[in-house]
Structure formats: structure tokens, C-alpha cells
Length: 347
Ligand code: DNO
Image (cartoon, helix red, strand yellow):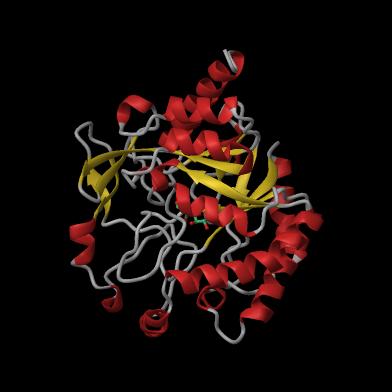
């Protein structure tokens, strides 16, 4: 495995100099942030990220995300042209040495939380989710915002989108995803890029919008649409783990070879459709981090791994979920976990 760390570019308060000092860190996970979803990334912008990473002893082999524009997801009339742009980005990324591209197929909203600064007993704070609280918020009034999202909409754009999606149900979304995959995966194969879809977070429908990348059955359906190694998964333990029916250890074992990117984080389930983000180790939350890592390694996983959202600790402020300190602690926990398991593989 290769340990990586998400970096939001020059505006990120976390610097490449800091990232390189985290033990065993191999590279960054980043993206071109100044092009709207659907646009083409210039080779200069892609190579600039790579040069900055290399100048700090870090690789740039993973992109998170090349966002899929809404029109592809809802199947608008410009979808074919936008898919072609998407393919061009994959070609350019492959040419620059990128080996894995993370993306999601969640309509309108990416990850959702109801609280950004949930106070924990130890004085830290973290992101939290409570469906009841979330449903009291009105997205059309602009109540929802998450600084970690790659995209944001004006109120008018948002209302228009929510309206369009009234006629897109789960099966329609599957259909549009199929069109996307059939066009993109052959290009990714050619470009030497593994595509890695991110699960929906949380893994159920919210605000009446369809969500389909949610659990074992649907992941299996997804992988069979184009049965190629280039059509793979981002296994996000915090996202899938919020679905209490998901058996993450079994899923990790089953899909290990098609998992190209692993987002490791822990959550504590605090009620029905309610959870709080916690420190990475197993004993901090509800997710069996050891069991998942063991299942992956024993079943042939050999992809990129990154610590996911951290709490805000030691007085740090910054981008919610993406501070330095707790993610760095998570990274060293992951390095230790993997070293221990790899040394006793299949024993
Ligand atoms: C949240 C992230 C997601 C992820 C996208 C992938 O912290 O894991 O925003 O980057 O869903 O496209």
C-alpha cells in the first residue's frame, strides 16, 4: 500500500512541508480546484501540482476528485459532450503519471453533516451527523454548507437542480451511471488510470434525492456494469460504516482487488441515523479498523490509503475534517496497523 494525504492546493492551511514530515508518507491526493465541474484541466495546472509535490519529496498519483457534473448524473442534453471532457481529463492525468482517480455519483450534495463543530468530552471537536437535525435544515434556503465540498451552488442553481432531480429515480441514476462508465472506463484503461468511485455519504437517500453507491449489493452491481480492474472503488469506511447493515469486513474481503483507494476513518454510531466522527483507532468508535485492514491485506489489496477526516485537536482551526494534527495521528496509526498485518499476512 502507499500512504497518502489529501492536500487542497496552495490555499490549504496544511503545507506540503508539513505533510512530508509525517512518517512513511508517499504522496499527496489533490485536484485542480479552479476549473468548474465539466471543464477541462490544463496540463500546466496538473503538472504544477506534480512539481510542487515532487519538490517536497512527495508523489502525485491520486486525484480526488474529478467531479462529475450534475448534467451527466441527471442525463441532460450536454451529457455526451461533458463525458468527452471528462475522458480528456483522464487522458491528461494518466499522461502526468496519475494512477488513481476518485469521484462520486451523488446527486447535488456530496458528503453531508448536520454539525461541523461537535464538542467531544476530551475538548476536541469533530463533524457529526443527525438525520433529524439535518431534515430541519432547508437546502433551498441555503442552510446547508460544508467547506469540504468540491462544488458549491448559488441558491438559484440549487433550486433548479433539486427540481430536475424530481424526475430522476434510482434506476434512472443507474442508467446514467452506466452510460458514464461505458465511455470513461475504456479511456481510463488506455491511460493507465484506475477509477475509484466514492460511496455515498451517508449511504442512504436524503432530501428525496436518489443515492445508489450504498452497500454490498449495489457495489456488486456497480462493479459488474464494466467488469474491468479500471472500474473500481474507493472504500470509505466512515461512509459505508454509517449504514449499520453494512458488514465492512466482509465487503473488504470480497472487493479487495477492486479497491484502489482506501479512506480510513472511524465513526461512533450514537443513535438511529446518527453518528459522530472520532479518532482513527478501532477502540475510539464503532468500526473494526483492524478487521477491515486485515481482510483487505489477506485478500490482495494493494492500493492507496489515506487517513480521512480528523477531529480538530490541540486548538487547531482550519478546514473542517481536514486539519493536520489528527489526520497525521491517523496516518501513523494506519502505518502501524498495516505493518503489523503485513508481517503476519495469511497467518
Ligand atoms: C469527504 C470526501 C468526499 C470525496 C468525494 C469524492 O471528505 O471524502 O468529498 O472527496 O465524495 O468525489
